[in-house]
Amino acid sequence: MTYDDSNVFAKILRGELPCHKIYEDDETFSFLDIMPRANGHALVIPKSPAVNLFDVDTATLCAAIRTVHMLAPIIRNAMEADGILIQQFNEAAAGQTVFHVHFHIVPRWEDTALKPHTGEMEDSEVLAENAEKISDALDVA
Ligand code: AMP
Image 1 (tube, rainbow, N blue to C red):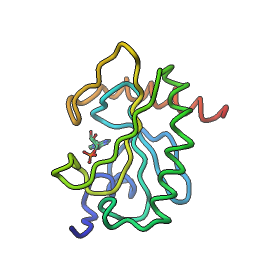
Image 2: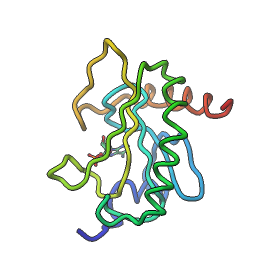
Image 3: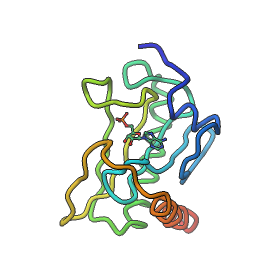
Image 4: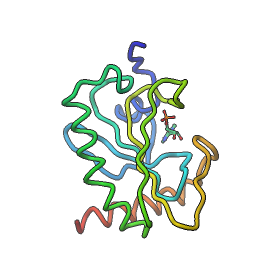
């Protein structure tokens, strides 16, 4: 599959679509999933275009996983989660719905079931509140 820069994450990177941003550096960008599987569900994307694991170059992938590694404990603390699930889907058959490579960071609690993948749209106020919690935790990290 060739990269199509009309995908939603490319639009978010260009500032053409809004998002609840939590982090950005030279190579990566992170924001909250609009249909979270759990409170505080975040996405990490590289700024370079790549569809998924099959075309991304190693340096780009390393930058993305470095950001996942940095953010996961901060999100766990900010959301007071018991654990963190990392998910990464490649191709539609595997559940990929947005064709710009990304990692999911999903907070988990012992007594809380995972919501379905791309289930219900979350209220903007809830996303804003969670983004603020995570950004505050990042500021003091
Ligand atoms: P995947 O199925 O792994 O490709 O995941 C794509 C994710 O992007 C899904 O979890 C969607 O809920 C999420 N998503 C789709 N559109 C947006 C958007 N505009 N802002 C934030 N997350 C989105």
